[in-house]
Length: 428
Image 1 (cartoon, helix red, strand yellow):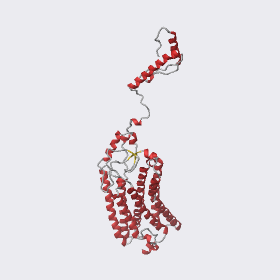
Image 2 (cartoon, helix red, strand yellow; image 1 turned 60 degrees about the horizontal axis):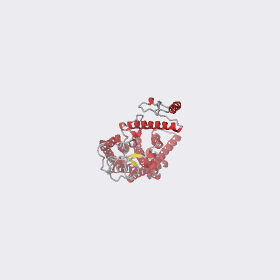
Image 3 (cartoon, rainbow, N blue to C red; image 1 turned 60 degrees about the vertical axis):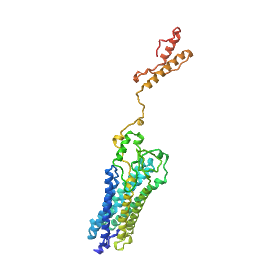
Image 4 (cartoon, rainbow, N blue to C red; image 1 turned 30 degrees about the vertical axis):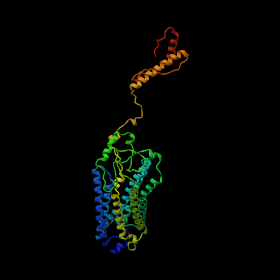
């Protein structure tokens, strides 16, 4: 049995032994506490109408970590237990990829806050959705690459091919882990444009602090949504971004502005530190794969203590950063306005002028028509005239009367022939 285990491919963290039980059990207990903490934060926020769904994802991510370390303990009891071994490896690798994916979502929200025009374009969203689709393909490639060599008898060529697939997937995970920092770099490397400054943004103005023990007022988000029923279209269609007070963009103001200083320096630090820690773990796992050694000849990279530190200590620290740093407040983007609010059409949204005329407009039309008459009388003295179009004031467009050129000339001749009368029988 020992010879069979020694002849296997080396693994990151090595094959488990009795010494793995205690640290793995500690990690199970630690991630249980973290999962409960994330669930409590989500439940408190949900009860107050503050919906930050990523918190529940982090809670389930901790559950995957619990399963990974718990199955590693089961694996110790029966090393040839292939299903437990492979499932443990899967639940130790997958949570890191999930953390990177949601770090990318957080970085995307920072980018959209700093560049609301670019962050709301379809091109940008298309690129981001493509990245999220790529990670699904990477996961779909990583799972069989890690499983097939252990559950099927393979020829030498097939065995080497699957190892190369595993190498490629490890490199892709490394590159994917850097996308969050890259997006943060783009957000601050490129300065906001004038369009970004002029575009209206909808921030959660009811968030007053990022303190670890602060929670928003109950139904504050719903009350804020109701205020949009009396706002203009620019406000109702503003770009939804995260909360901040150190900006110079047009922001949809709320009913109150009693907030502390909400800056995002710590937000950048949280995303950067967590991404770097995950990146380190991905690099060590990739080194293990590229070493391409047998278990009996494995290096220090395959030591179980390194696995405990990276998959256990690092990710526990990342979850503590999320909880203490109140990522659920820092990266909260207001929910989409209800359909009844978005369906409101105000005067600012009307493109065409209303066909209904007011009384003042009718008076103006009558006075302008009178001016037309006086101008016509003066033409008889000057011996010249111009062709005009007049309309009898009426509420119906069909009653409009257009004066033709022949009628106009005939009326002028009548005026000239009747020198004894000062009033013409011709009526316009």
